[in-house]
Length: 162
Image (cartoon, rainbow, N blue to C red; front, side, top):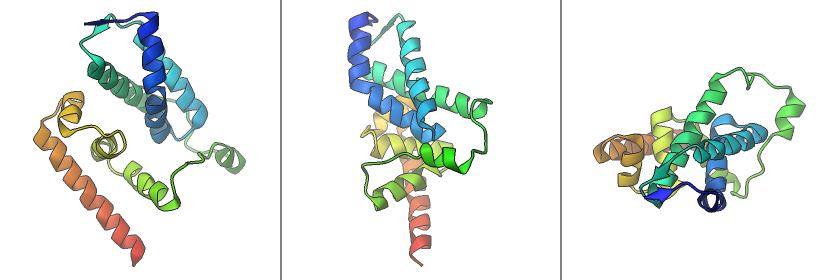
């Protein structure tokens, strides 16, 4: 059992803060909000008593980041409309090439269940078993969601080519 300590939180922050930020940013689409969510997630980590292993910590961070980001989107903290100059100021500059960024945008437009599964599998390099454990679903459901997500992405990509 891994006990939550200052050293453990520091190590977890060093290892996983970028991942938590990417998850939050992909949901809220605002840098400042994503940074706030990272801090909220690690503050919540301080209140935890312990974890079974390193994988449990990572899974907890993913779920917590996703839930906090969804709560922010549903709350009044993010308005549905933004002035154009503010929107351009908050635009994320990505190290991804144009086509890779386009595919990530397509992934983020998938329905929530598919988006989460596809993102975790391809962008966080998690196995189907790990995803199933985190999302509390069967491995077969993970594979089915991946299949549906790939099919939807293929349809979107073929639609852009034509």
